[in-house]
Image (tube, rainbow, N blue to C red; front, side):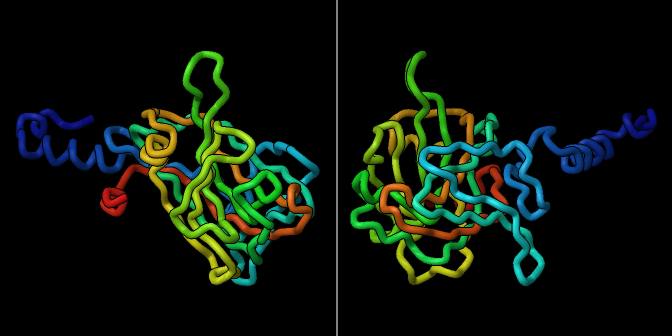
Length: 231
């Protein structure tokens, strides 16, 4: 309890309240939320979703001791999905790290036959209308499409692909990305949303019948910062 004599001093009260707000998470300022705690060896909440065969997902330790999620696909397509409502008015920024062994290099990744990627991270939002399926923005490590390019998924208009890495030049290196999900969804689907329902990852090679290996670091969401204003 704050003593009465302190409460009578406006300056002291202001200092006390300021300290309280800073030290108490979630009081006024939105806080970063870790969704994928792979470095802690935690996969709780991440459920497998198979489309064709099974990509193998397992927690592994790197030489430096860090734990990450490894994905190995051989002519298969399955992912891990986390069901979690995220308020995009508070934490619209999706942040993740990934690394690949090499790109899948399919014949044409804009086609159904080439819709394979060594690494994908994507989010799902409610579709427009009561009976609509969810819409999703899918961030990929492309093989041939340049960084910054985007295209509708060849299987469904409910998903839009975005190349945030591309080619073999940076294969083997860890890459960190942060994307404004709310702005990206508005850009590719033409409507504003205030929340999402799922986050997912997938390494897949079912269409090309090739193989791929990728690694995923922790995944989190955060409030927009100064670096996000220029996107």
